[in-house]
Amino acid sequence: MHAREIKKGIEAICCVHWERRLFDSLIPLPDGTSYNAYLVRGETATALVDSADPALRDELMEQLQGVDNIDYVVSQHSEQDHAGALPDVLKRFPSAKLLCSEKARDMLISHLHVPEERVRVVADGESVSLGNKTLTFIYTPWVHWPETMCTYVPEDQCLFSCDFFGSHLATTDLYVTDQAKVYEAAKRYYAEIMMPFRAIIAKNIEKLSELDFDMIAPSHGPVYDQPDFILEAYKDWISPQMKNEVVLPYISMHGSTEMMVKHLIDALTAKGVSVQAFDLAVVDIGKLAIALVDAATLIVGTPTVHVGPHPAVYYVSHLANLLKPKLKYAAIVGSYGWSSKAIEQIAGLIPNLKVDVLGTVLQKGLPDAGTFAQIDILADNIAKAHYADELVSGTGRAV
Image (cartoon, rainbow, N blue to C red; front, side):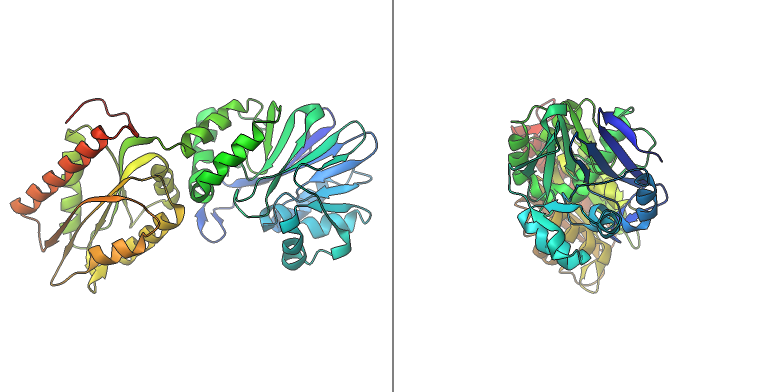
C-alpha cells in the first residue's frame, strides 16, 4: 500500500497485516490489524513517527524508498509492532536521530539493540522544529506501557496517539467510514489492552484535552478525522457508570452446570437484567473482554475438576483479575461429584476485583427443585442490587 496524505505535508504509511489472527500469542485478531507510521515533512527537516512490526518491515521500507532523507525518527512506544522495524529505518537513514521518552531509551537499546549514540531523549512537553511544522511530545504513560507518549503537530492540529485510541482492524480505509465496525474493534482493543489502566487513561485524556486537534492518527486502525467519536467512546468506557448487564462465562462437563446456568439466565431475563453468556469451550476471549467493559456483575459457572474449578474457569478468572473491569458484583454457580473447593479457589483468583459477592450456588450432582429455588433467589438478589444502584444504567423498573 502506498503512503497517503492526511494533512498537507503529513503522510500515513499503513502496513496492513491482513492474515494475522493472534497478537502476542494471546490476543485474538479476528479482523487482522495494521501498523501505521506517519511521515511529517517540514521545510527544514523530515520526521518519521513510529515504524512497523518486523513481519512487515519490507513493506514499510518499500514505502520509504522515495524518501531522500529523514532527520528524526520518533519512537512513541517500544513494543515490537511499532518499534520492531526501527533498526532497518536507522540503517537506511544513517543521519537520523531517534527521539523517545526517557523510559523508552533503555528499552529501545535493550530490546532492539539500537545504538546508544543514535538515541535522543525528549522531555514531556518538549518541541522539535521541522521548519514550518513542530513536533510536540506528550508523555502518556501506561497506555499501555510505562514509556508511551503521543506526538502533536500544532500547525496541523494533528495528534499521533500510538496505541491510544487504536483498533486492531485490517482495512484499506484511511479514515473511519463505518463507525459501528470501528467502534467494536476499538472497544475490543480497549478491553483487551487498555482496561487495566482506566484511572491513568482518564488523566491522560484530560492532559490531551488541553491540545487543539481535529484529527487523531493512531498506530493501529483507521485515522479519526472526527475525533469526538473515539474520545466520547473512551470517556464512556472509563467512566464509573455500569450497565444493567451480567457477564456469565461458564463451562459444563456433564450438563449439571449448564442446566443451572440456563435457569439463571431465564430468571435474570425475566427480571429485566441483560445477560451475556459465554461457553468457555468455544469462547472468543476478546468478545468476553468487550462484555466486561460495561457490565455490573460477573457470574462464573463451573463444574469441579479434582476438587477445584475447571481449568478454563481458572483461565478466565485470572484474565478478569488482570483486566480489572469496573464490576461491582459477583456470584458463582456450579456443580460437583463428591467434593469441591471451587468457590474458595475462584475467590482466591480475583483479588483485584473489588466486588460484593451476591451469592453462590454449588450443587452435588444434578440440580433439583431446591437448586433452582436457590438460583431464583440469587437472580432476585442481583436484580435488586442493579436496580438499587445509581451507578448502573439501563435499569428501567424497580424489582
